[in-house]
Structures are given as structure tokens and as C-alpha cells.
Image (cartoon, rainbow, N blue to C red; front, side):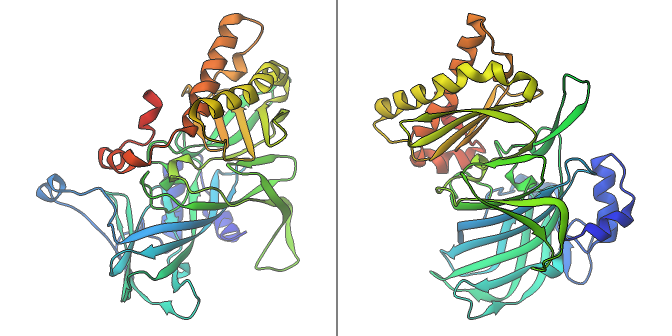
Length: 387
């Protein structure tokens, strides 16, 4: 995989900060202080008072292609690649994305017209740590109504209960197992991949996750295909690893994107033979999830009738993360829960789970486009969840 040889030379230690420091010294990256191709923006006190944390309004994302390989059982690095397809709303000579706790490989950043007729040169790359902005200054202006693609390789780190993070649990035999999951609310998708991380800036997503063959990966949409991990389109691959490619998503905000890599198993049910409903948990606790699997499709049907809106997805996964601190995180097609693991015959536990399913499946049916811009202004994401 990209960076694998370099990473082996760094001697990375357990701390995330130390990992980043070591990689920053090794790679030509946006977190490293100024060189000939980039600068780091710093702000004075007066500038901070006037700081506009919103992205420029000149570009609108249309589609993301994301490839991530989290080394969940290794040093917790994430090898990443992203393509962002965008439309120009107003002429501009720079591209600004959100980015945090990510190292970009500057010489891989490319900008080209979507029709493939021309590439656009990059004269400078800049990182603004105050606003968590990555800025590519271009050699020519992007024209209004045209579409362009920005692509780059990058390196991230599995964090601690935000962004793309590592969770753990202890199996019945006393073995510690690792899980990679996501919490992107309210503004932490930028810690997993460079993006337009504002709720009003919706786009479609095609996600590719690399995993070890004895593990499973999930995202918002159904699995489309699994293939070996290969280098540079060569037949020689990375033994024991595969890529899972997921179907293109419906248009959605970045904070609703979700990933999971685990050794969990599942119980399956169906909603009217049209949508697959699965509850995932560690193997020693999966029987506790049987009731949730049976009641979930019924709740989906109820909300379809209540809102008079058909459930737009072909599958809904609920995942019981043993050490998740939040009550539940409802994402399109993939809900991470903290209470399913506790469900048993106790009526109180069942009621807690029912409330969780209702709150996190039901709110996805609501149409909140009208206030998405207001939520972005206020720095909120899932504002309607509290209604």
C-alpha cells in the first residue's frame, strides 16, 4: 500500500502526536512549516476576532471517491486517497477544503477538468490551522459552471472517539479485539478525509475500505464488490488484505458518512423484502440483539407511514459498539449504538433500545434541507435530532 515502506522506517510510537510528528518530518506535507511549495497561515488577535470559519461559497461538491486502509491491528495509521468532484458556482483561483489530523502528500495533489481535457497547475499549497483549511492556490482561474476534480494521497491516524477512531473490547476468552468506527458529528469527517465539511454541502460518496480478510467492513450503502489489495494495478498484492467497494450513496452531508471495520457478526431481517436490516455485535453478545433485529423493520415501516416518505435505502445496519460513549449515532444506512449491547429480557433495556432505534432511524426520514444552511452558520450538524 502507498506509504507502507516509508512508514516502516519511522519507528512510530503509540502516541498519535508522536506518530504525526515523525511522519511530518519524513514527508513533504501540509502540517510541516513553510517550504517552497507551501505556507502555514497564522492569525493575529484582531484577525481571529473577524475569523470567518465558513468555506468559500465559490465551489460546491458533487461526488467523493474515498479509499482508506486503516491499520487497525498495526500502528493505527490510515493510508488514504480521495477524489472530490465539484462544480464552480463563482470564478475562483483556489480550492479550499477542510482537513485536520491529516498529512497530505503534496506531490500527488492534482486538479483537472472533469471532462479530462486539461489539468490545472498548482502554484502553492497552504494549511490554515485556525480554520482547519487546506488551500490549493491555482495557476489559473476555475470557470463558472464548469466541473473539476481534485485528487490526493494522504495519511491519517485512527483517533480517540472522533473522526475515524479505534474502539476495543475484550472477548470471552480475555482477548482484546480492535474495531475501527466513525463519529463525524458535528465536524469530524475532516479527520478521516479532506472534504467540504459543512452540513449544507451535500454530495454522493463512493467508499472503498481495505481490511484484513478475517474482518468485515461496513459503510452507508450495500457492498458492491470485494477484490484483492494490489499495488499500482499490478497483480502482486498485499497478502491477507482485500478492498471492499460500496455502492454510491444518496446525496448527504459529510457528517452522515460512516465506516466500520470489525470482526463482528450479525443477525438479519428484512423490511418488506426491499431493505435489509442487520444488527451487528461481538460474537459473545449477538444473541442479545435478536429482538432489535425483529423490531427494527417494523419501526421503519411506521416512520414511512408517519412521514409519508419511502425509506430511500436498500439496507440499514445497527452496530453495538461496546465502549461507545454517545447514546447513538444515526447515519444513513449505518447506526452505531451504545445500548444494543445491554439489551436482554429486562423491559427497561428493551425500552431503551426501542427509543434508540426510533430516534436514529426515524430522524433520517425528515427533510431538513431548509435549515441546513442555518445549521452550518451556527456550527451545528444534527440539529433536528433534539426535536
